Image (tube, rainbow, N blue to C red):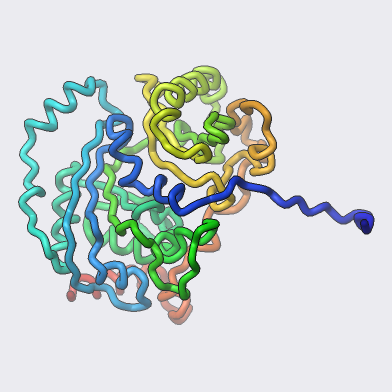
Length: 354
């Protein structure tokens, strides 16, 4: 064996549990949502997405393509409400959901109308995602610098500008041991259908979002979701850890089928209720946030909840997240003389002319 050269760091290969297509599919929104419907945000799903719309998302220039498909509507409870499950169900049953009258075999304009209908139904604002990913890498292009959408145009602009969306469409199974590679930019979802998920927009406090890591069926680590300092979290640390652990043991552990996975939650500190936001693969494609994957993979027992402890905490990210994804292909190909405002204005104009 050759000795390690002096001053040269040893390269450590991380060994993750095998990742299969079935495990990825379990993290797809419509796979887990029915089981956690009472513990997540109110949502509507357009499924399946028209093939033409999928091509639109993958195309370089097309902004408006007709298609067809059915729509599926799913309900969830308001995470900021003090209503009981029964009260929420009774109130929901009493509402007249005008969206239900929409017909099948939609064209692209009807897809736009369905999105508008859902936005109205969900009190005027939503945030979008596909089966797995939200276009958070494209939030920089929206007027609010968030994923908040109040019109179909907002939804289309975010989805069209996101590399994460392209990953969902073309590379969802890329790291799976049972994946069969396909040509570049060819949709590869396989047995699953593409779906557009529209979730009701809430002004959730980012300090109360947490990422939870489950290894071999046991909760092994919890991390603050956003790497920023929030002074009040220190005094809530023990309570937050207890609330999340109780939620995992009572609601998640026996209901999510995989043994290795990651899930994101929001904690309402007033009601002490924990809300599921998403499920992700237990793999390097999922960000470990304040941990290193090596810590999680080698841990023999549960690690303490990890928080940013001060404004000088070295765990605070010094670079903008997703900075390598900040420019869609159309913008890269444009002359640098055209500003971001011009790009957004041009996109809006083309959209309105359709």
